[in-house]
Image (cartoon, rainbow, N blue to C red; front, side, top):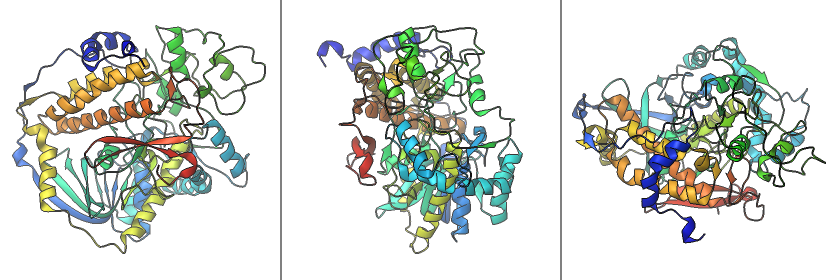
Length: 586
């Protein structure tokens, strides 16, 4: 690329406040916030008043959604002493409360054999799925659904009572409203974790033989989707101790509504008051960025809600000779299409977007989140063991590629989380039994306390809210996050690196709530860096990753996933992991 097409870091930062704010989609992100110079911190709690408590367990489960529930239950049933810790409430935080469909494969009455189903998923995902985890969905979903029925999950729109039943029966302790910030590694494996209470001035250190991360995915706290308490906390904790992370170039395409930011989510998952139900096999090609492409080529204003409810209308994608191959499932295009362009690919004979969503919708309400199960810790075996010995992950915290880089089966996210949580919990419990506990050194505990409380102790700095607004204004525009090209991503990366190097270390907090926000904001900054670097590396378009400057699928070079890790110098590194080489690394 010539010098004339590149924006310098200084030039981009100088113009971003005007260009990004003006170009942001209505209803999705704030315009660039006004300049906030470093201001004096005025804490209303005393950082020196924080007490410390240390606890021991065999298996530590971090997260209390459906993956965390099954991880805790199955680890207990395998004979381990288990402790669950969560930033939110049991069954009431993350995305679990909003998942109203749970996939169940009925082997006796299925419309597809397992091999047929696997072939269709691989076709729709353009090869990006990991068939080991796709097959788990077929083999275990009915059993997990049967347990959920026994616990009363399908009898109430809320999860708390049904999740509490197996936890109470087994007397598994749960500690809620604990913001986890650090994982500890000694002798080459994970040995514990630390975090702080959101309700009292206390820091907790957990000594554990094994850990299962069920911390979900995350985003950039965009409007229109109940994702605001998920900020990739588990992923970044694991990355910081050397775990490999994957899937950051993919984008979840849940649409948003310019008039009612929650309406599109309701159409997809049902109102929170609705009872959960099961779904059966139906392979789709959902939640990609085809609607974002339509918005890009048509221009604004863009309606972001369901087509049948919006008063604003957009036209179909203009007819033309070019068809982005990455916006459809693999295989030949439909014969003799009546129209050209994207509309030819999403006609009556091709997979369509989410139910009830027309071409008037555009993805963006989950900005910062990838397709369910396509991002998170890289597994090195079928149990969800990460590249760090003793550390497992499950659900949306595990980059299992169960569906691939596109969402192929409605209800598979909830079912997949339950299945992976159960498998990981049992594996972690069995691994813990012969293991000798390794103590966390006192100096590491002291250093962790210093890092946790640093935002409270800063005399001056930047508020998490302001830094988050800057990050949103840089990352969420359609022409940066969804319809990608090198020039804009490099420019955005310059801004994110500035936040990471300068503003992140100056985040300040006046109380426990803002202390949580400070740590979440830093996690989002690192996630943004990951997304931009992975998107720059993948020089093709496939599934929910689209590059204007590389619009074709490149099977010669890109039948591979992208992994990221922190090297010995603390620098972010990227590598390919070829589809047919798993679990081997490059």
